[in-house]
Length: 394
Image 1: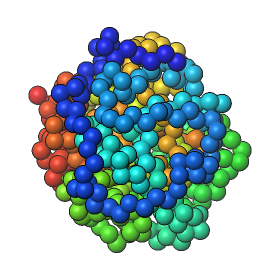
Image 2: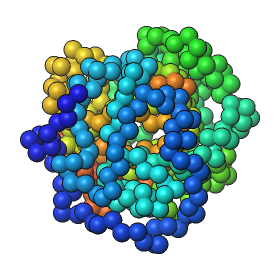
Image 3: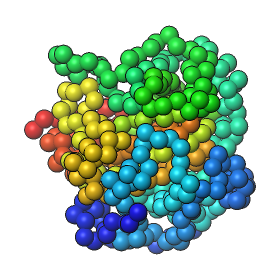
Image 4: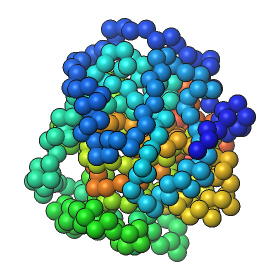
């Protein structure tokens, strides 16, 4: 793969040059206890595929746009590794920065990346490591047995396009892309998930996607208790604006499941508690190139209706001109996806991912690109409180 030239590509209009603070270690951001859980080498040895990753060199200062992120053509990315194939290639080159959360200097670097709305990943996070060890199949089976609000979606294949028929979205002859199964228990889903890993089921067979949520500021659920970094009522590294927190969303995925590309208006911290997922990211400026549904009344509003695994479609839609980032998020890592960035997700095996969003950035990075693409004005201020961000027709 050949990186895209940042200077020559008109879609890369993310300008960081006017807001590049120098990196200085200070005590004000060191509010959480620093305790090294293990070296990077030890962390790597616990991964499912530790030897097929080429890790990026640590950048010791905040880079300019000519250096980071490193973009590749979206077409080249999916041509080299088709999303319908969950098995990682023999060698995978990571380009996102990986910061050791338990290292004070690297955590300070990560704060600067977060504040400037640049994607990155974290590892060696004490609370995450504790939870990954705690969330055994047996523990989850017991904890989810009487959990309210869990549901499962079923698809005829491995593709899952988000949809919602609630309230203001009511099209006429609409047929949902997936089927909701309210009565499937975790134990039954787990049988399907383990079978998918053992048999390496094809992308054309039925897949099941198990989902549970914990409401914002509700600390009574086992999810909130086990993930205090996301359920906090006080600002921390992961949730800097608790008033805009949207709770915790946990997704239990079978091998091969694809969540189609979409953006979220809130800054998004994504913790991988089991297994691994592939994330393909594109910046907000690509909105009009990747098939995003712009009708605010559509059940799949702000999601892409394109099948990114269809190489011919990708070619015809000009994906060669779409800048993208490809990364694998492994057990124990957290991925930061900035507001309005598009993300396309592939579960490479039985995986558990929990994420939490906490409002849009103060400087509204990416919002203008989305508003131009959707033809709407976004209610930015209300989203940073306790109401949902929706588009408004001009």
